[in-house]
Length: 232
Image (cartoon, rainbow, N blue to C red; front, side, top):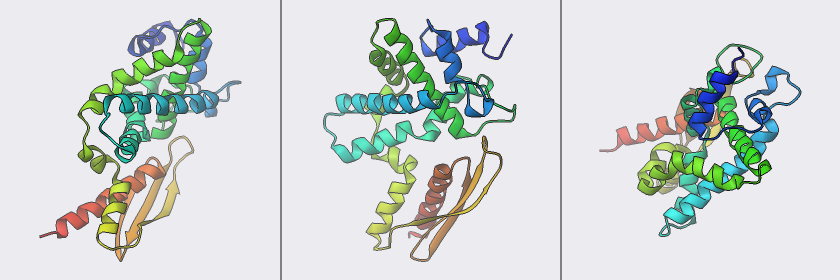
């Protein structure tokens, strides 16, 4: 039985709350470009990214009528970032379902992309059957994020959107905007490692991550921690 044979497909469908009428869409969503298949998940990922951003924005707009654009954008950034999608992928057990050219562990970005591809596959599958694909994807996104949207405050993105927090803190201190420098990139394409330095006004910090964005965020967090430690 293949890795995405009937039993594993049923488990994934149960977690998504959707049974695919067209299993080929599911196979496409779970096919990384490295697998060399005739159809990989890049086109679906493109569509899924737009659907995810729309559904998260719609839920935030509806649930937080007292918020302005700035906080809404920051919260959406926290909920649709690679780290959040990677965690969702792990809960869906995508590392063992994704078709790749190697059995080596996949990085965070390909798994995050696969979640977006799955959302697009659900949308297209429902639409093809005459249903409301957008409503189905919205239900999935709300099941995942509605509680966080309702309970969110500024501390959520201060902890997670560290790059924005660092930029705002540097401005408050009268420092120039932080500058991020890629120091090294190693590892295979499907599981790269990035090492980054961030600096402003003579203050620097370095970090490593599975994506450049993750490395930059961790470097920003380290620099913020340095400033916190220096405060009386």
